[in-house]
Picture (tube, one colour):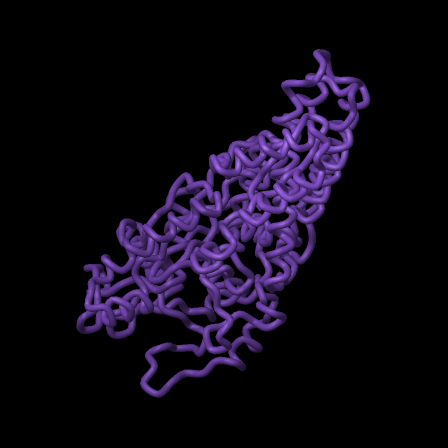
Length: 463
């Protein structure tokens, strides 16, 4: 498998440090509010990457943190008259509601900053002891001048980065690009005791500490949105590599940003959408499908038309699954034919080719729909066997599971009044009273159900 490495700006072969096991660290949310669709893109991309690696036979250690102490959390707590812990714990609870709705599997470890303060303090102390960080009135800053490679992820030399920075009046930093790894306590804010005084961690240091603790000095894949490249991931690299002397990650994998109606999503523009709000209108699964429907590095543009088309595409997949279940009982006994086995093999090879080439979920989805086309053609043939259908079904299920799709297994219960109308329509058709049959069909349609005639009989489903 080849993945585009932000560090080297080229596709590189995935070569796990531990053969057969891929270790991934993905930056999680700052938990003070519901997640928005920008957050959801990274969650769906890296959840699917994890699923695909397992599909390919790897074991995966997946770590995703929660930032549960931060300026935004403190501000929200003060506004609500609650503690920071109350705000963050409620946000984490709501996160898991949305994550479950999007079919995001839980990480192997979801470390929280507040539960890992000892290891965070330890790495800050290491940086001070090695001369890479300095204390200033209770704050501790990383000295970027001591790390000549600073800027290597964002591909910006230190001079250019400094040109956009400045030292404020009264600032305690030695250099404009220095950043806090420990912040001195302020009145009314949560704090922890440390060798540098009461305080709390800077944002960047937490991931350096927790990735090292739960994975090791070097990660196989470090993931996140492209908005994290600078300064967050750049600062992680500086801290970690100075503390350990080892590369922080072998591959840096970043998903692209999300626009809304061709405009950058922002609160000020009024086009900021929470996953919860969209799910109330469209359901969670169309959101996941949309977020995987384009290449992860490409910019994704959300519009009503896009998500409606994703909803329709999902329905084609559900229709295929339902057709398989409906046709199977009446199909002839028999093993899968050579032609069907070749179809299945071709589908898998096309899917793997797409996903192995920089995790191209868009082409992977296209491979699934080509399989659907072949399945639909086979299901209307009187020669199809149970073995044929099972071979198709197994592959269809395997590939949609990798994408995390078709997880709504609840069958819609057809109301009794609709069922009664269906029986009346069957009787009318048998009596060749087609005008009455059409009239009954119209009544069923008006009730929100679709009637279809298939080789296996009448099928009714929710519109």
